[in-house]
Image 1 (cartoon, rainbow, N blue to C red):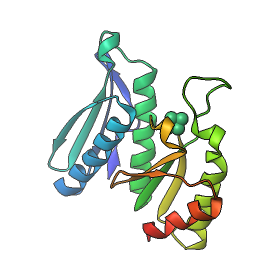
Image 2 (image 1 turned 90 degrees about the vertical axis):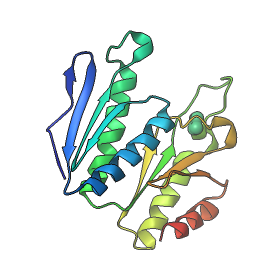
Image 3 (image 1 turned 120 degrees about the vertical axis):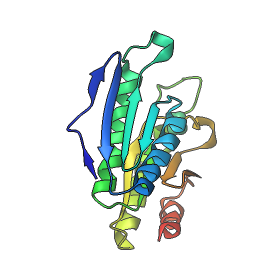
Length: 175
Ligand code: FES
């Protein structure tokens, strides 16, 4: 896979393209990015062809301009595609979002998601899963469910248990 060096701002949108060895690889990347857009509730335009994929993101409700939402999506797409080039088979995004005391909605960081993420990382390492990347994420909008994580490319959602031992055991499913 080859990518243009960075995102370009083109006519009020951030845009980046990648080339692949075949259409199946490009389609797989498009599928992963689509799941990411659903997760962030911010939907980019994807142009898919034989061996190439272009992602274009703008904020329609701000008048088709580039906003923080687009930069956040671009950063997450980069993480995902970076993992592709490094050969990661799976990505686990763990929400570390923290809301202030007394906020209307609960937040994962206040329910121990950092410790749980570290337990997942240690477990993946202990199991020799070098092709599984466990990393932090912003709010996944499942705040009421408990500490949340999502596994790509299959977009499986996890509500992490309270105990780090039980959370670590989840990684067994990623073999
Ligand atoms: S704060 Fe973690 S899902 Fe919203």
